[in-house]
Every structure is written in C-alpha cells, then in structure tokens.
Length: 378
Image (tube, rainbow, N blue to C red; front, side, top):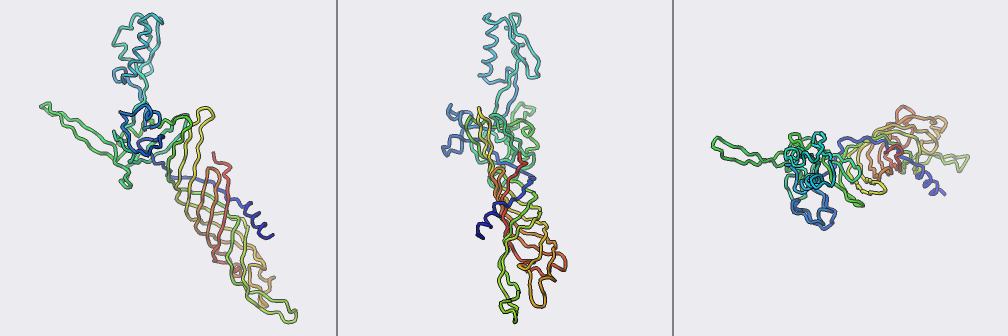
C-alpha cells in the first residue's frame, strides 16, 4: 500500500519549466545529405540528378539581370520573348530586379537593351563555405522552418578554430598593377561580420517527407518546483513507551518522502538535437530532445512533526512543533522531449531560524524528482 501511495505522489509531482534560453546556436554545415550513403563530400557543380534531389547545399536567393543569369534561366526569358515574336501572345509583362514592369510586345521584342533589363530570382549556392566539397566545417546559426525551407541566420561574430570548426570564408582578390599584370591573392577570413553573407537570407531546401537533424547548445534559465523529495535514512532520538512505567530514550533510523511546496531557480548548460520534418500536405513537424545539467537555489517551508524531530524525555514533542523556512541548493539533470520534461535533482535544505535546530534533516542531502509538461510552450 505504501508503494502505491509513493507512485501516486510521483504521478502528481510536476516540475514547472518556464524556460528562457540564451545563446542558443545550431551547428550548420555545407550541406544536408538525405541519401544516407555515408558520403561526406559532393561536388556542387557536378551533382547528378539523384544527388540534386537529395543533397541540399546551403543556398541563397538572388535577383540577377539577364546577362548574369544561368543559361537555364536565360532560356526561360528567351522563351517568353519568343511567344511575342511568334505571335502566340500579343504582349507579356516582365520585371527587372527593382520591380519595374516592362511590357514586351511587337514593338520591342527584338530590342536587346530591353531584354538585358529583365531580371529573375534564382537560387545560388551560398558562399559561406566557399567552393568546398566537404562537410567538415561547422558554423553557429539560428534556424527558422517555414514551408520547404529551413532558414539559416549565421551568428555574426568571429568563430574559433576548434573541432575542425571554422576554416572561414575563402576570399580571392585580383590586383592589377601599372603594367597590367594580374596578381591573385587567396586569403581566409574567419570573421563573418566582414561578409555580406551574414545579412543575406540563406536556407536549405527540405524535400517532402524528409527530416533534417541539427545539433544545438544553449544556456538555460528556468523556474522549477521539486514537490517530491526523498530524505535519506538518518538517526533520530525517540521515546520507547512499550513499558508505561519505565519509558526509555532510544535511537532509531528515520527516512522521509516530503511533498512540500517549494520554488527554485535553475540554470545550466543544454545540449540536444532538433528534427525538422517537411510535410507538404499536412504541415511541417519539429521535434526537439535535449539534456540540461546545472545548479539551483530556492526556498521551501518545512513543518516539524514527530517523524522528523528528536523526541526525548527532556524534549517532548509539544515543545518542538512549528514551521520554518529553508534555503535549498544543489544540482540537477533534466531530460526533455518537446513539451515533456523529467528532472532528477540532488540537494541540501538548510533551515533558517532557531526552531530549525530540532529538524533532523537540517543540512542533510536529499533526492528529488519532477515530471513536467510545459503548457505555455509554443
């Protein structure tokens, strides 16, 4: 019966997580490989059709005028001009990169200067990783998932060089001297602040019904409650009244499960992984699992009673009853799956005030458990 009661208390125990995260960063790389072929390098300019469908490099969208477009996109504009030239349509409307509208009809479909004004948005490989074909460079970034695009906001600060991390952006500078001689200089720049790339919209394209996985780290600050605590077995002085005519003072072992209300602030280091699944028809799905270790400090109220105080002939129970406050501190580990969290905590409660001197668990270690559901997490 006692075990059922403890299980009931565990089911009721709820750890409240109102999490605030600081410095959250995902680890982004050159490309996402959905082929699962254990290959960590691909040549972007020579991808096969199968690889193009499943290997998604970090990209950006840029509006380019006709002369700067790829051959494929130039053909798309040429085909529209041809519709007018062949008389299939009387006119068409096209735009330049500034949003100006041009009407193409029989009076100007042969005008090359007009054609050169026309612009088109095209997807280009982002320059963050240069022309690297490998996937061993890592940058920190924030992520936003919308439709089939996983948008990447690179952290604009100088990266370190540990864990094969930041080889930087390759820059090629061409200098021409007075004798028209060209000198090419290639340098590395680890400071993303010096690159316009940090202010451009970068993204990965996620194929339908595919999942991209990214690891992340963050600093976590949260308010928690630890309603269920187990206090380890401890010596307690009591009175043996089995013989009414000759009561005796004895020492017995005592342990306790407490369910007092308490509040604490918990801060720690978090690491985990987020899975971004694109589902075209029924909406995207995001699943995050993470681990947090850290320390907490808080307070609680404790009621003195016969089971947690010394009761002797010199100190009867009536002189020791009361309620006092404690300062709680310790360490904890929290495992989270989206909105569900399970926490294990270990700490010490130090009583405040004279009456706390009678409490046998004063300054003694305890273990606590909490199961939480974050109702306010979006």
